[in-house]
Length: 109
Image (cartoon, rainbow, N blue to C red):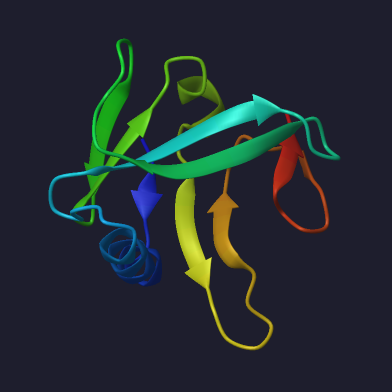
């Protein structure tokens, strides 16, 4: 469902540990909400539990939960991390997006 690059995995583990989450047991919550300059925007948070109706995935030792409304929008997405001087942070490479904004934080279908 959602793939996690090696760089994203490293950054997620570090951020989870800093925030009091356990990278081996807790979740990365990924979702889509209305808004952003292209119509839909991505959400990424950490969570200690699943909610009713969540879909659970695991890739590259990262546990991911997605609410049922967001699953169709995110199918096949690769979560990457780009650091450095010109890095953007977390980047969603979504094959379903027909148009994205310049910053890459929102998209439309």
